Every structure is written in C-alpha cells, then in structure tokens.
View 1 (tube, one colour):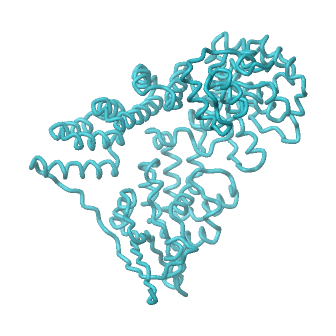
View 2 (tube, helix red, strand yellow; view 1 turned 135 degrees about the vertical axis):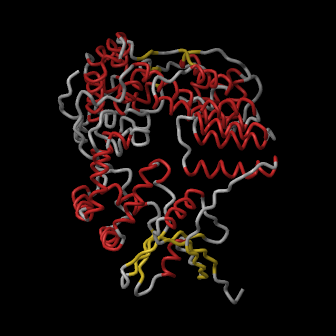
View 3 (cartoon, one colour; view 1 turned 180 degrees about the vertical axis):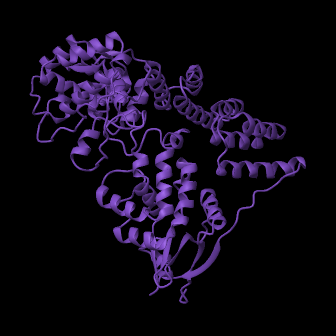
Length: 563
C-alpha cells in the first residue's frame, strides 16, 4: 500500500437525520480501504451486500448495531422517524442479505430481556401450574421458569401472540470493523457524535495508508478472543475461560501484554475461589510485575516460603521487563517478611522522607481536606493551589505535545485519539528520542516557557490525556513557569518518562508559591487516619534526592471546646 494521505474521517453534521448512518459508513469505507486484506472473502461480501442496500435499510441495521442488544422486537424499532414505519419490509431486505435472522429461536433468558414484567407473568402462568403473585419480581419469575428447563421457542410462541423479532447475525463483523478502525473496543460508534457535539476535540492527525491498527488478521482475531473472555466473566465458568486463554499464543508483544493482563485477572478470580495452584500458575504465566507481587503474596499466604526467593531471582534474571521502582519496593517488603521466617539476610530499601508539616485546623464540612489545608497554609505571601496530578502532567503534555502527536507508524489509527496507541509500550521513547531531546534542550536553554505558553494558547480545549484544561488555569501555568526552576521540571519529566503508565500519578496534592521569595513547594496532604500510598512515597523520595522542595502535611481537626 502507498503512504499518501487521504481524506480524513470526519463526523457528519447532526443536522442530517441520517448522521449516524453517514458516520458508520465513513468508518466502514475507511476500514475497507486500509484493512481490506485483513477481511476474509465472506466478510467483504457481506459488507458489499450491506452497502448495496437502500438508505433506510442500512439505517435500520446501524440503529440496531449501535445499541447494546443483539435481539429486537419489531415494536422497539418503530420510533425512528427518518427510517419510516415499514420495518417489516426493511427487515426483509436485511434478512435477504443475511445480516439479520427474523423470528429466531430464543432461550428463556433472551426473551426475558425483551419483555416487561406483565408479559413475563402471563408467560409464567402458562408453564407453571402453581398460582403466581402479581407482585412477583422478574427475577423470581425467571428462577421459577428456569426450573422448568423449557426449550428455545420463537418469541410469538413464548408470548402466544403474533410478535415479530429480529436477531443480528452481523454483530461479530461490525465489532471487528469497529476494532480495526479504533484499534480498541473502548471507543464506540458514538465517538463521531460526541466530537461533532463539541464534547471532545482532538488534535488533527495526518493519516495515510500506513495508519493501520493491525497488520495481520491473527492480531484482530486474538484481540477479539481476549476481549470475549473478559466479557464472559459472568456467564462462562472460570475453568473454561482459563483453557481458552491458555490456548492463545500471542502474535506480537502488545497482544502479549493484553494476554498477560487477562491471565492476571483470571488468576485473581482463581485466588478468590481458593484455587491456589491455578492462581499461582496463571500469575507466573502472566509475566507482569503486578502478577509477580500477587504471586509472592499468595506463596506467603499459603506458607510456601521456600519457593519465594527462587521466584524473585528468576523474575529479575529472566523477565523481559525490568521491575519498576514500585515493584522493587513491594518485592523488598516480601523479602523482609521472608527473612524473618527463614532467618536469611535482607537489605531494606530505605526511602528518604521530605519535610513534615503538622497542622491542626477547624474542619470545614463543605471543603475537602486538601482545600481546607490550602486555606490554612495560605497568607499574604503564600498562595496554594489544589492540583494533585493535574499541574505536572499538564506542563508535560504542553511541552511534549509534538512528542505525543508525532506521526509514528502504529501510533495513530483514526482522528479520535487523546494519546498515541503506543504510549505505554517499551519502544515509545526510542522511536521519539530526537523529539524528546529537543524538549529537554528547551528546558536547558530557557525556550520551554515560550513553547508551553504557545501550546496553551494554540491547543486550548483539545483533548490530550495529560492535560487538565478545566483545572489548570492560565494563571497557574504562568506562576509555575515563573517560579519552578527549569532543572526541577527536567528532573520530574525524566522520571515521568521512565514509566509513563505508573509515574503520571502520585504527585502531591498542593503546590505552594511564595510570591515574595519567588519559590515553591509541593505538599502532600494527609487527613486523620490517612497514610501515604507507595507511588506517593516514591515520588517524595525522588523529590528529596533531587532537592525539589516538598513536604507532607499531616492534618488533625481542631476540637470544639464545647464538646
């Protein structure tokens, strides 16, 4: 395929009553142009049949596709004015193209999702000989009916009245199309609509024929298979889902990451079910650092102490992933407890502690403890802002904007992305090394302030997963640029880039600016009974090491003398 840019997918105006159809067809045509080689012959033929249908028939199908159900009563589809009322004729056209099944056989639970309680009560009276109270809930009626082990029937047979129903046969295909367009299954067909409404604005990305989320059909198949196992957690027994997950052999590293996360989640389920051996094997197979911590704790809990040290050594030597500082801290705690059990040597990790502030102040019921602390510590010289993770991430997002939106193959697939798809992958920094260095050069030569101001002005309101437009004001940006030294920002951004997934959280709650002295301090607030989280401790340790001013404010509520 060539790499020339093409017309970009755009949201259709909501003034068009068929806006949703235009948006869906934009998605379908985009996938057909970029991913046709990843569709099989029958899928391409089915899409061709769909595109050959009259506009109203296409619209009816897309209305059904966009909703959460796959089975419909005809009466549910009568209220779309732009489609018209001749649903029966349109359904016939869809059936002839093998897109839906009319009057399908339905299991009892499928029927229950389509009918109201009164209809279910009438149905139950036909199959249950004992008297039934009108006040019976749908759940109670279903439980009674399920005991009867009734075979599947058509909806009209269940209700004993003529009732037409339709079942989508093409839902798997349209799920596949949506996945290939967005590169994930979190985003839905409505993404076009919320963009057109202005709820989200995205950075314009130049897309071309290299802008593909997937390069092999097996990638799509494995992604869908993994997602299906996730979604079946309430309907399919755990052993069956484990077998299916273990049968998947990931085709590449990013599918392997999703596969590892699934094994981790299944391991948690097995642990909750007290199936210790299965949980341990799933955690080990996951290869995730989080899974290792769960595995070590489970080995402790089951008193398999002799297995812990070899497992830690094996992970450090054989895992493709270097343990993060947080994982090392958690592993160190396991080693500490193990040393007491087995009387083995142990070298503790000792974190540096920042300045301590002890504050006793009246409790203000209308304010959070962080806001109350900001008021208590503020004065004519000091002004405090409740920023938590917002300020530093926003400054990073503004300075590193060109890094985040660099046209790297595999980073952007469609116009509705708030961050590159490879943000958390191991080669993110390597592929953008020159752009990242340019940002650090700006911090070194002083150009960063102008760059951040310009980006704030140019990009205000554009969705960027690092930027919190509604929290970080222009005033706050200006104070931060004027008072926080460039070398401090550099050190903070270096750590942030070392582990973007985990280090973008854990920042202190408040930032304090001393307007007279022109200095600042980052302050973590802890109310009565609260404690520091590990990611917060690690950031504070880093701040102390880098001589970045920081403190923890321990708050106690002032007691009312009348009490």
